[in-house]
Image (cartoon, rainbow, N blue to C red):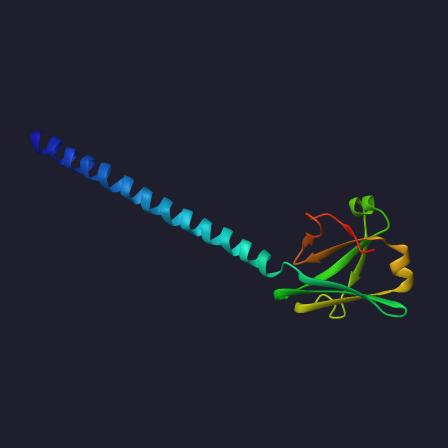
Length: 138
């Protein structure tokens, strides 16, 4: 009987030491994986953030251009009023279509420029404007 109790104490003692170490190791690996996924998501949005946005006007055209650090798909959403963006705003693709690029140029005809007032840049599925809201290009 003493032998059985001794073996039982050794088994439970070993398990009480090994099991928490195993759980902590797996938890640590899980947390590191989640951190890597989170950082990866942040990097992708940072490299697709538009910068160097310019608006230039030529005779019957207006060009809105911007750059991204990495190749990203991008387009403009246009609205007559600020509230148009709650519904279905007018979508204008760049010359490259929805193909990823680092230099984005969207050309608007004079009639579109006069008809629409507000704009949002959509890059890699995220809205960019003034604090993420539409802004006026006039």
